[in-house]
Amino acid sequence: MEQQNQKLKAFTVLLRASQSVQEASKRDHSKHGLNPTEFAVLELLYHKGDQPIQVIGKKILIASSSITYVVDKLEEKGFVVRRACPSDRRVTYAAITDEGKRIMDQIFPRHIEVIEEIFNVITDDEVNILIDLLKKVGYNAKNS
Image 1 (cartoon, rainbow, N blue to C red):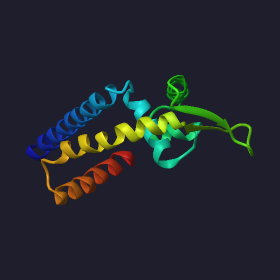
Image 2 (image 1 turned 180 degrees about the horizontal axis):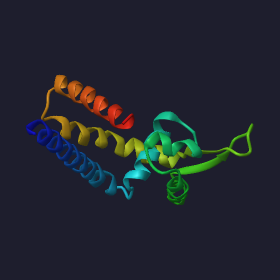
Image 3 (image 1 turned 60 degrees about the horizontal axis):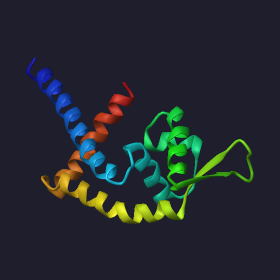
Protein backbone atom coordinates (compact mmCIF):
# COMPACT_ATOMS: atom_id res chain seq x y z
CA MET A 1 0.00 0.00 0.00
CA GLU A 2 2.85 2.40 0.84
CA GLN A 3 4.51 1.78 -2.56
CA GLN A 4 1.17 2.39 -4.29
CA ASN A 5 0.86 5.74 -2.47
CA GLN A 6 4.42 6.66 -3.51
CA LYS A 7 3.63 5.91 -7.16
CA LEU A 8 0.51 8.05 -7.00
CA LYS A 9 2.58 10.80 -5.39
CA ALA A 10 5.24 10.45 -8.13
CA PHE A 11 2.51 10.78 -10.76
CA THR A 12 1.17 13.97 -9.14
CA VAL A 13 4.65 15.43 -8.70
CA LEU A 14 5.50 14.67 -12.35
CA LEU A 15 2.36 16.40 -13.61
CA ARG A 16 2.83 19.45 -11.38
CA ALA A 17 6.50 19.77 -12.29
CA SER A 18 5.66 19.48 -15.98
CA GLN A 19 3.00 22.16 -15.63
CA SER A 20 5.41 24.49 -13.82
CA VAL A 21 8.15 24.00 -16.42
CA GLN A 22 5.68 24.63 -19.24
CA GLU A 23 4.44 27.80 -17.56
CA ALA A 24 7.98 29.15 -17.17
CA SER A 25 8.68 28.45 -20.83
CA LYS A 26 5.34 29.96 -21.86
CA ARG A 27 6.07 33.18 -19.94
CA ASP A 28 9.31 33.48 -21.89
CA HIS A 29 7.86 33.09 -25.41
CA SER A 30 4.75 35.14 -24.72
CA LYS A 31 7.03 38.18 -24.34
CA HIS A 32 7.60 37.80 -28.09
CA GLY A 33 3.96 37.25 -29.04
CA LEU A 34 4.29 33.49 -29.45
CA ASN A 35 2.30 30.75 -27.80
CA PRO A 36 4.03 27.47 -26.90
CA THR A 37 2.87 25.69 -30.05
CA GLU A 38 4.01 28.50 -32.33
CA PHE A 39 7.37 28.52 -30.59
CA ALA A 40 7.67 24.73 -30.94
CA VAL A 41 6.98 24.90 -34.70
CA LEU A 42 9.44 27.76 -35.16
CA GLU A 43 12.08 25.94 -33.11
CA LEU A 44 11.65 22.80 -35.22
CA LEU A 45 11.98 24.73 -38.50
CA TYR A 46 14.86 26.80 -37.11
CA HIS A 47 16.89 23.72 -36.19
CA LYS A 48 15.73 21.12 -38.73
CA GLY A 49 14.84 23.17 -41.80
CA ASP A 50 11.75 22.87 -43.99
CA GLN A 51 9.27 20.24 -42.79
CA PRO A 52 6.18 18.69 -44.40
CA ILE A 53 3.21 20.21 -42.60
CA GLN A 54 1.72 16.74 -42.25
CA VAL A 55 4.61 15.54 -40.04
CA ILE A 56 5.15 18.62 -37.86
CA GLY A 57 2.45 17.57 -35.40
CA LYS A 58 4.13 14.23 -34.74
CA LYS A 59 7.49 15.89 -34.19
CA ILE A 60 6.27 18.48 -31.68
CA LEU A 61 3.53 16.36 -30.12
CA ILE A 62 0.41 18.30 -31.07
CA ALA A 63 -2.72 17.25 -32.91
CA SER A 64 -2.34 17.33 -36.68
CA SER A 65 -5.65 19.22 -36.86
CA SER A 66 -3.99 22.14 -35.02
CA ILE A 67 -0.96 22.41 -37.31
CA THR A 68 -2.75 24.19 -40.16
CA TYR A 69 -4.02 26.84 -37.75
CA VAL A 70 -0.58 27.31 -36.16
CA VAL A 71 1.15 27.57 -39.54
CA ASP A 72 -1.53 30.09 -40.64
CA LYS A 73 -0.78 32.24 -37.57
CA LEU A 74 2.99 32.03 -38.12
CA GLU A 75 2.46 32.98 -41.77
CA GLU A 76 0.40 36.01 -40.72
CA LYS A 77 3.30 37.07 -38.48
CA GLY A 78 5.74 36.68 -41.36
CA PHE A 79 7.75 33.91 -39.64
CA VAL A 80 6.81 30.98 -41.89
CA VAL A 81 5.86 30.37 -45.53
CA ARG A 82 4.31 27.36 -47.20
CA ARG A 83 6.16 25.73 -50.09
CA ALA A 84 4.77 23.10 -52.42
CA CYS A 85 6.80 19.92 -52.74
CA PRO A 86 8.15 19.82 -56.30
CA SER A 87 7.88 16.03 -56.55
CA ASP A 88 4.54 15.42 -54.78
CA ARG A 89 1.62 17.84 -55.11
CA ARG A 90 -0.04 16.34 -52.03
CA VAL A 91 2.80 17.53 -49.78
CA THR A 92 3.24 21.09 -48.54
CA TYR A 93 6.28 22.19 -46.56
CA ALA A 94 6.49 24.84 -43.87
CA ALA A 95 9.67 26.90 -44.14
CA ILE A 96 11.04 29.50 -41.77
CA THR A 97 11.45 32.97 -43.27
CA ASP A 98 14.36 35.35 -42.75
CA GLU A 99 12.14 37.20 -40.25
CA GLY A 100 11.43 33.90 -38.46
CA LYS A 101 15.17 33.20 -38.28
CA ARG A 102 15.79 36.71 -36.98
CA ILE A 103 13.25 36.34 -34.17
CA MET A 104 14.62 32.90 -33.24
CA ASP A 105 18.19 34.24 -33.28
CA GLN A 106 16.93 36.83 -30.81
CA ILE A 107 14.83 34.67 -28.49
CA PHE A 108 16.39 31.19 -28.60
CA PRO A 109 19.46 32.09 -26.49
CA ARG A 110 17.12 33.37 -23.75
CA HIS A 111 15.04 30.20 -24.05
CA ILE A 112 18.19 28.16 -23.35
CA GLU A 113 18.90 30.35 -20.31
CA VAL A 114 15.36 29.80 -18.97
CA ILE A 115 15.73 26.02 -19.32
CA GLU A 116 19.16 26.13 -17.65
CA GLU A 117 17.71 28.20 -14.78
CA ILE A 118 14.92 25.66 -14.29
CA PHE A 119 17.37 22.76 -14.08
CA ASN A 120 20.13 24.50 -12.10
CA VAL A 121 18.76 23.01 -8.86
CA ILE A 122 20.04 19.56 -9.87
CA THR A 123 23.48 18.32 -10.90
CA ASP A 124 24.44 17.20 -14.40
CA ASP A 125 24.43 13.60 -13.17
CA GLU A 126 20.94 14.07 -11.75
CA VAL A 127 19.78 15.52 -15.08
CA ASN A 128 21.01 12.37 -16.83
CA ILE A 129 19.31 10.15 -14.24
CA LEU A 130 16.10 12.17 -14.64
CA ILE A 131 16.22 11.74 -18.43
CA ASP A 132 16.71 7.98 -18.09
CA LEU A 133 13.92 7.60 -15.52
CA LEU A 134 11.44 9.72 -17.47
CA LYS A 135 12.18 7.76 -20.66
CA LYS A 136 11.65 4.51 -18.78
CA VAL A 137 8.30 5.65 -17.39
CA GLY A 138 7.26 7.19 -20.71
CA TYR A 139 8.04 4.05 -22.73
CA ASN A 140 6.21 1.91 -20.19
CA ALA A 141 3.16 4.18 -20.31
CA LYS A 142 3.20 4.14 -24.11
CA ASN A 143 3.32 0.34 -24.19
CA SER A 144 0.73 -0.25 -21.44
